[in-house]
Amino acid sequence: MRIKADELFTYLDLLVAARRPIKLDSEPGAGKSKMLEAYCRARDRESRKAGRGGYGMFVLDMSKANIADIQGYMMPKDETGVLPDGTPIELTSGKFTYPYFLYDQFTGRPAYEFNEGMIILEEWGQGGREEKRACAPIINDRRLGRWHFPHLDVCILSNRPEDRSGVTPEFDFLINRWTEATLQPTLKGFLEVSAVLGMTALTQAFAKRNEVLLFTGKVPEKQGPWMTQRSLHGLDDIFKEALAQGVPLDSGVMLTAAAGTVGEGPAKQYIAFMKHRSRVPTVSKVVADPIGCEIPGELDALTFLIFDLASKTTIANIGALTTYVKRMPADLAVTYFHAATSRDEDLVSTPEFGAFARSNQAVLTAIAMRLRKQAGK
Image (cartoon, rainbow, N blue to C red):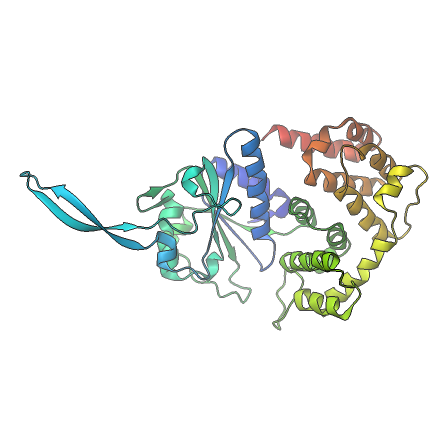
């Protein structure tokens, strides 16, 4: 069975509450790792806000793990004991070290300091048979030797066997103890996670305007860079650094870097899409005159503008920006709402968003759904 990316958080909440180990697979680059990171970050904010001390994220990469990485190293330890007849004895016993992966990815704190969190077994399909077997206590009992963590959730991430990914066979005794599904990437899911992870408005707009390119679900027959959510995220990081370092965005250096990340064709499309950054009004210009400020006529530029405004919406400027967005088609108003509130959920409760919604039934429905979601947390 498949689970849509925009329904994944609800799916995870359900299985976490039921204390079920979760197995999630997909084609390579479908965004599993980043979606789980976004989920853990959201749970962490929620936990800290409620005074529960945070939600940890503990990751083990199975593609390069050995038995000692999983269970720790056996170290000798001198002990004394007493026989049944009262005779004292001295002996050397073994004690495993604390596994290296049980330290939070966000803070570096060990798992035993947390009341809640998630162990993520990454690249599960590339793990060896014996390494998978060694993970059985984690999956089945949330235990590793004398270390017990009943407060932690468990999620297993894997590529599909059919995608030239070198997936190793599974054990039936593990399959019967987890709940598995295949992730169905969706644009809505990508946009929600990209907002949480701080991707640029340019990349978000490019994804919305190139949905077919991004979600083919196929691995190319010939090996080389290709467009996936993962590689697009990598290109977004390169784009940010180019801006920071002053590298010309239309230079050969930028094109080469982009082509080596997502493939030559998609790279040229991405570079061409950059031109819209200079064709839209700035946020300060919109705020200064939301009624008279021009609205781009080209859909690509308009889409970029929506994500740019959403990424820069604050309590201070929300009134002017929503006044401006009201002048646009209704579907773009909904896109703006989702993009802005995925980045900052507190915007949903502002009077300005309430007034904005009353002028657009689709936005009003979206606000109602998000408020119900917040209330259910």
